[in-house]
Image (cartoon, helix red, strand yellow):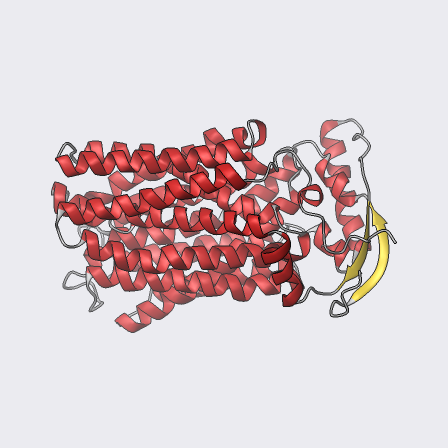
Length: 486
């Protein structure tokens, strides 16, 4: 390594990445899925609960002097702004301090902010705690996706990554059903029920924090940062557990890496790698994140308002409809995930983006004609989001696996922050304004914006997606620390 600005250590040769990739699926891998993936359930719970309780929060007696538009507009935008800034802040530290330390810290931040949201008694406190909750979740995106891809074997990486990111929608189902109970004033006073939903989120986060203690640091990260003995102990323990479970020896690993260990990678080298060496991959990452952010905001942030305004659905019943949609979202990654590892990334990423965009265009057309009621609108949204959910999850998979190990967390954070800021901050403000007017044409326009950007991202994916299926991370993007032949 010749970059003077990079602090280097010893040069070592290792087969640890190959040893991790050749592992068969085991109970240990399920423990990683549970330990790391369950946080997206909390994210889904958070976002859904806020959307579903917006109308109740704006009613007299809620305990907060806030309007529905402020909940779905300002509060939602602050949550996303917090997630974007948190991703950038924590993402850099994830590459420097390690995956495990950061996915513990960021979950603790989320836990504290959610608990404080439950006791907010003024509007500006509610806004501040929504920002801090997002700040913790944003860090989770970088730390968790890095750890997932570095611990899961190449053969299963695509489907597992999609399934874990798609588990957001299990939380959305729970949030929808929970909001129905919380908004029932025969069970809880109007100023108490919504607080209990946030308190439950904090309790669940505490449980996940305890489970997550047993997830190891990424051996790949340890290797590069001069802690190869610790990496060796972790991988050796995993191998012994898998062999004991299968009652047969593991196959020999194929391939070694010779790396120059380092403490950190400079911003200059990260920028040169992402924007010069892998320029086309950067265009792909931006396109995927912006497309999915706008499509989801076009639907989800105006979901309750659309049902109540155009279809006369009582505010307390919107949770039932959203639970159905959320289940459809989860089924997409669950049923399509394996195809990303078999059919391939390019076909599946471009296909899911294009199909979801075209289906949303069709939904907008039917809605404009007055051909839909609450049930058929929900069915259309289910079809759109079945494909969109798999596509959106593949955006995280893509930026996690197509950039070098040393830039992985920061790359995830950067593309998430920029793409989500474009669609996730402006999206809620724009779409809340469009769907709150009560005019069919404005809601149709919201759908068309989301659909158009999703289709554009699908076209970019058809041209630029990387054939990363079943390939090791080191083969997809050579680590910057790999020793060059002289």
